[in-house]
Image (cartoon, rainbow, N blue to C red; front, side, top):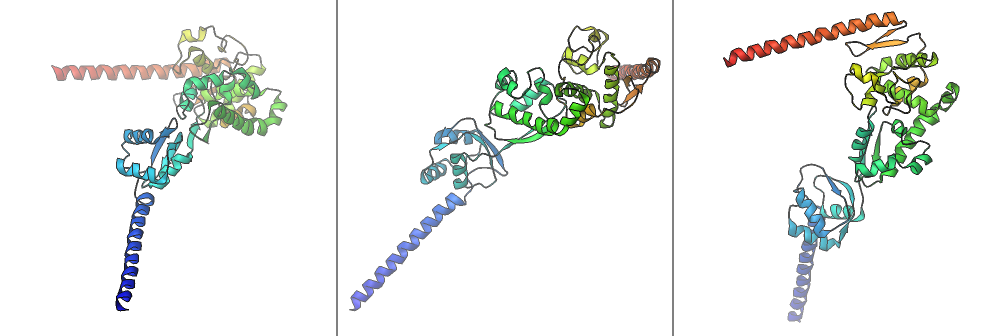
Length: 359
């Protein structure tokens, strides 16, 4: 009787010990999988997988970024959680991310969006560079979309004018998005913010969207101060209505392919965008204008100005007559020549000082 009693107690005790050991093992496994940090990182990191990877491929990627703390433990976690492949994409991984969170996120392809900011007043080459640089696709793929006539026809625009509709805004995309889906959304944003909102105004003016956007692109490039945009717009409208050549310097910059101070010979370049030679608006926009430039193009300030010249402050001097314009232009040239003189004198003084010290 007694022996059987103690045998029963020993059995129960053994079961308890076994359960306790099993619990400790399970708790340890749980802790390693769900609590232990899977990456060597003191802050959130961005991981980009350009293609689907197997376990070895993922480990190589993590090693390249010095993120893999323990190769053996990582392999154990992968085998325990039964993950074999990890999907392409951009993943924002928080500091202290666990093995379970890391592997399931990559295995399921739960991407984190990237943020794309399209700035106003950019050249086409800069837009292509900045947009393609944010995604998996390259600049060649993006250029193909921007010159795809059938794709652009669906959006109601052509390759010469599409730059003007690359609407400046901040967008959230997945890194693996196609170039076509990116451009389609940017064009849709232009549609929603400009065409839909100002449709009646386009009709009132009797101008096409492309004509207004082309004018707005010149205003975007010309004006360094927001407060001047409606005045500059009014000036250009005045010249167009009087049949005068637009004579807009940004169109010359576009023709020569550089943003720089223009030289006398630049104004003679035979180019369809040279508004000093050819009347009316140029064939297309010179940059991508923001809403703050498109609205002044649609609602110009009412005045009689026909001429303007940049001042030392970056603002413009506006004139109604050519004689007044000549006087303001002369004042600007005198100021500019004085600045060059001061710069030359400072350079000479510096050279003299350097020569005396070396001697």
